[in-house]
Image (tube, rainbow, N blue to C red):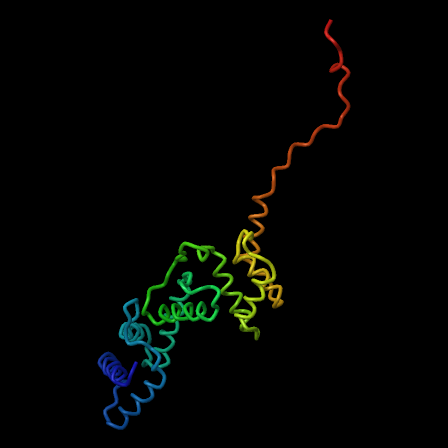
Length: 225
């Protein structure tokens, strides 16, 4: 919120709880400056479920204490966390061979969801082509983990792809995740490991019934007369 919006918020609070009103000009200016310092990253209202006036009204109804700017900031942070908890990252349209663009698009989408500019996406929005593999999300996460550990994602991805051809791989993304995690000493990705184990289990041929090695009964050799 900018200072004008903060002033409107304080005027609204003053109508609901006169204890918070400041009558002197200097006091009012100081109050606006203090609230703006703590609420500059809080939205006044969004198109997806947040209105600061609703948060203030709920506090006035539920608490006997005058509302403070930290109360509003905490409600806003809780709102952001709830939205991100309900959000599943859609597959970016960026080229997965460009880790920087991939990561930038993911972060931009998450920021839009957190700030109320976009609604949470409950399911993966997979597109056609190679990016439709569910493992591409795991690949993006692996590259982010590697970058957090001091590795260069672009260099790592190039080296992993060059280690062996990928044309015959059942899952290109899963193969790259496995290579990258071995190269960077990261723990195995649980989702990829479970998926690989399931494919291996499903591809195993059925075990034929065991043949009996017991000696045949003498009756089996008797000839009919």
